[in-house]
Image (tube, rainbow, N blue to C red; front, top):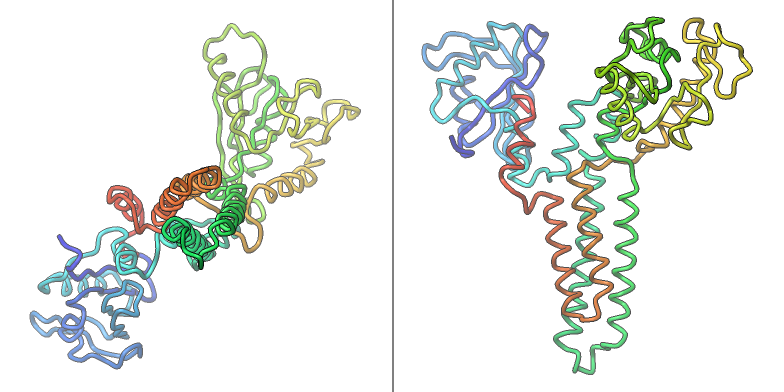
Length: 428
């Protein structure tokens, strides 16, 4: 198997469907189109053609064909799109005819996108954004992923690269020509320091932005409190289904119950936990309590259904649950999951808190890989500014440029790239 092979795959939904789009990419694309359709239409113009099996000239389908010569294609190679009827037999017949041609094989998961990356049509950040876009289930996920695909973060990285190159050039000039009259070495070091400070401020601001993991997996909302406080009933009301067992028996919830839900376009991960109490004679319940405390440590938002003086965190939302059964003079947000009283106010508060934790309109979010590398770049900038020796400053700036190359994928391990692309579906 080589990346010089030509590849094909169904890129539309699984048949049966109204239309099935089969994409072909690589050096054998034009000969394959000639073999199937008997002609190559004008570039980038849809044309109706009768597709025939090259083996026996039997008709396969009447389809729209598109000839897309490289390098101005999504993969950077010659491409063809066959817009066939979307029946299973039609798709299978056309794919079988393609697979029988020399130099053509079925694409592996993510191989079209990998070729776009290899040919410089996409950088690594756009690839990760495309992966998020394909997996997006909420509007906020879609918007942030699309910004990454369209290169907003990559353009910012390019600005960092240019700034690093300018700073490195000034550092080299100060080192190599400090004795020359036309290089003001006293002033240039101050300019380098100011430039590094400005760049570090821009890089550092991005680290304060919301993470893509929170956007993808959902804002973690943990329901906690003592046994029989109404946590499971509230969870079921929030997610709109019977996800947790509800019982008057204390200790019914023994383990964490995690339920994803989307509310008004925002992804949440609600976690019901075991009732918290200091002592229990049940070993299984004790394990559940330990896991509940671990969930509280990882929570983005805590709904506390216990006493006010036992709030696990200062920003926890105090909920006076079961207002239909208990007096309403308790502090906190009064609600009843059974009657619906106060639920709208709770959902509105969750939305307000969640939107403060997620990218705003027009913002993108960084994955852990990206955040780690941005953090490394910031460390190199701080070291460059703190250095008293200009040689050290120049070296830290060079290391910073190397980190920028890793951010875009110009420098990276093959194993990491293989893992990333293997997560795509076939035909993408």
